[in-house]
Image (cartoon, rainbow over the protein chains, first blue to last red):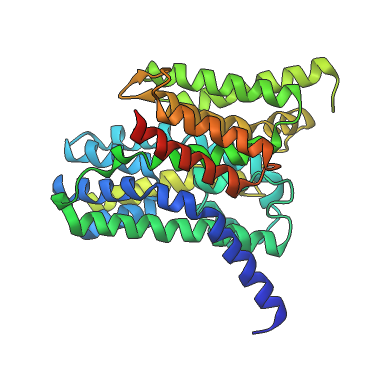
Length: 234
Length: 104
């Protein structure tokens, strides 16, 4: 292998390694989705297709239930849209860095842009050069493969596996996100944003508000921005 | 019919992800919006974390027997001590979480 290729490959591998805790953390949800879909009367091809092309944990689990309950097409698509609305925020945040990139990168990384990939896109240099693009591809691509593998296991295992979502593997998501957030909290403004996001998100979640994540994040961003303006930081 | 719905769902998730990555979309982000978006990363991540830590079975859990709380505290503490090394922080958090889960 040529040296340049080798370097790109190792960037992708680094991305996959950084994603690993998150890929493992969603195992219970992937299995839950696969077995749920089969139990609710979907064929295994349909179940796998969900993870293969829809590729969104919460969207899949909610819509598979709605479809099984014969909800109208509008209800199904609208619920998916509400849950997916947070992606607009991710796209906006990465627009400056990704929109000048070639179409195949935009399509590929756009397709892979989950919460987890966005979490690994916080570095200011993210997606700025080829290595950073391959890093994102390794991270997002490995997460895609893991999610589809967990779904497949759920489809095959069906009800023979116990519910693993009570195991606490979701803590790995929390721990990873905490570790990723901390280095970025250097100013009063970013600290305030984090505190507001945390409190608002818990409150909105307890109220079972569908847009809890997006609204908590938007509120927190406004607080951070306002404090930054008041303190005159640029 | 199911297959068609699944394809439409894929259009929804991909559409929301891709829309703002398209350069030809006539939208220029002003400097204020860019500064606002700088807070999007931390805000979104914290907003995903805290319900995992504090909301269980639709109820608020702020008790000291909540292993998620101890794990998160350990991840934050070790993160500061280990100069924000992600692996140390995640490792310590998970370790404390597992121990706390057995304790309580």
